[in-house]
Length: 362
Ligand code: IPM
Ligand code: MN
Image 1: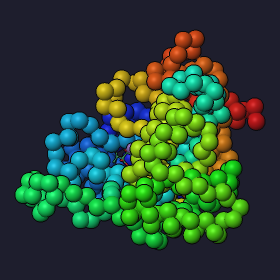
Image 2: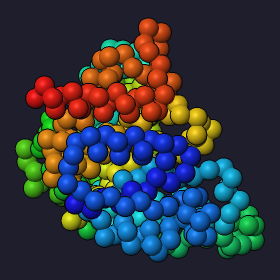
Image 3: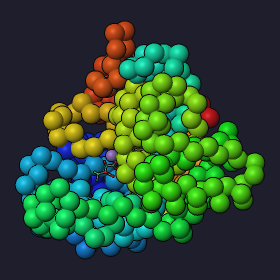
Image 4: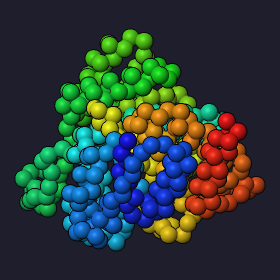
């Protein structure tokens, strides 16, 4: 098993370091190699996704990714900005299926901005299409407006587009995931306005015929955003496009108390995957040792389960995380009165201790 480790920028290196210590504690037979990505790679090689980094990722069974981005790169031309690294990896590796689970751990019910009864027991799986939509659609660019309210004015444009096979494959991923859960899929679209999402809705409806045991409903994205804060537990598997999935997954993340808890997996057709926390690089707290490493540690668990065929090891990580939360250990983002505030390293230590202890007591 080969794991490419891409720590990136901001808090990326700190949180990835803890995930690696947790993986090491499991004593599994894997090889790991690191490479710079994002702003760190721009500094070292003049490009956010250097050829060597891309090759390392392509040749690996799985990629463990930290985070990229920093305000100091905001004035670089778009193709050199750190965010291009993650977009380039998704596109080059064909990572079209993004899993973003939003689980509210019982101990963190009070950390959510919603009333406890709305989030207690919450367990949603957002499946976001990751290589199409307005993120990648061509043409895009700037020009002088050919028509409209201000002909001749400076104008920017992007293109939203999806092909039938792109929608079909993500729909299959969603229905198959639902079969392992409560057999319900909500497909989120904007078919009332956008042609792209009328096709989305039609294709998802067609694919659903192959899964008569799974219940499908459709929801417009604005309504979905509202329902997520009104009654989030009515959702189980949510499948949607790249752009809507980006927005709704941040919203869902917050329901669980902290985006610092949420892992993600991005898979291609051959189960090669990239695993990253759902949060960003948080440059404001970088280097201070206060970031929550649990989203990255839980991403490592998803990596073991989805790409490395080590489901039991993944379970061990997930129980260790529940154990440290039950012990009352909290990083600043999830801290509340009556719990113990710990830093990034101490949180990693505690997860490692929970794993090793379990090994000894069997
Ligand atoms: C995410 C991020 C990325 C996205 C950015 C960093 C390009 O927000 O993974 O959700 O928009 O997809
Ligand atoms: Mn996002």
